[in-house]
Length: 453
Image 1 (cartoon, helix red, strand yellow):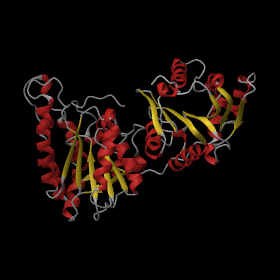
Image 2 (cartoon, helix red, strand yellow):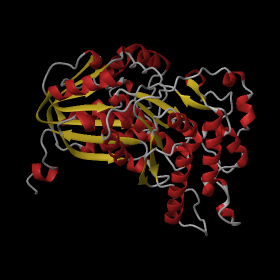
Image 3 (cartoon, one colour):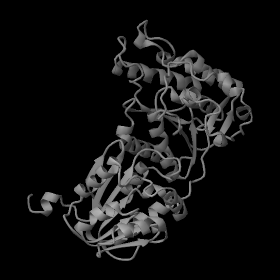
Image 4 (cartoon, helix red, strand yellow):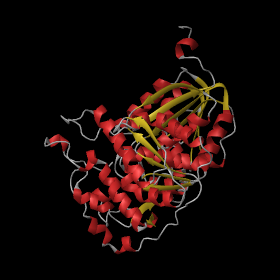
């Protein structure tokens, strides 16, 4: 995430509008029929980033539904004037006033999740939004805060909505808010190739200006106390006095990463992910081994073995272990490392083309899923399930921080598995850096398996 002070002026609005790339942004033909749902991370995002869209759709006789995910109670920590609950109440009233100015017929739903804590309740947000979108007919257009906006809550809402839009097969648009504050036009994180403008009628511009002012707790001081200063600087607010709304259009799906990518990486580094010398990797392996529900397994499949470090630590707990990797270079290094273990086989294999034949009591998918695109991941997970022996275990572990080159995030991989598998979720470990989930065809706990319970 980006570090910035929202109360500071930020990048001048004129710096954006004067840039030739901004002036030449292609226009987007906004869909003005069917069902549109606008989702905001906080009360005021819907106005700042999509207020003009709400006004345009209202004037087209197709008012959008508005969903506010967080309660907004975290905007003034330490305020002597309003505590979080009182502030949340004020902000709810403000968003109702603002949306009524923009689109009086738009229904508004406040999900009420904690402002600043959306990552911690991501599953609940996903459940809430999925239920809401399923109620009311097909969704034609979903509009949400941009995943790259530099604010964690915005990222969470954008990611969840992107996944739901993919499931629904609807148009998906994202609107930046804080990008205009912390970035400059030459910042490489500005997605110029995907930015589009929705042209606004004069009356939409006027209504948006009034709607922004309706968010009084954000644009005016609550009191003279330093903790009560406005969260939105007047200079930053000028960014939203434009006759266009800027949205980030859907990007093409990133293709899965192939063996050539990994071979090139191994050509540059002997141990590119630091398996042998990083405490993070050593600790992750210890967690992986500790969370397995059985002490020993007959047949084990490890997908994405790399240079074989985890393989070597799994080996004492397996009668037979098949380790595969898409990279020829990685497999050669793993074979050298594991040469003294005759019950371990290491093969070059791309599970995207098919999972190795056999029946396995344990399948380990560690730091692999996010290299696949979504259709391939779905297919691989189904194939791995089909290879799992009765009573078998599937362990999945992934890095959580975003990596631009990867088609998916670790969180996405784990959510897809959770939604699609028929296996019992028997163990999990979650922290800022990694997710580790264990599923089994045997629902019993370790104590139950060993006769302690």
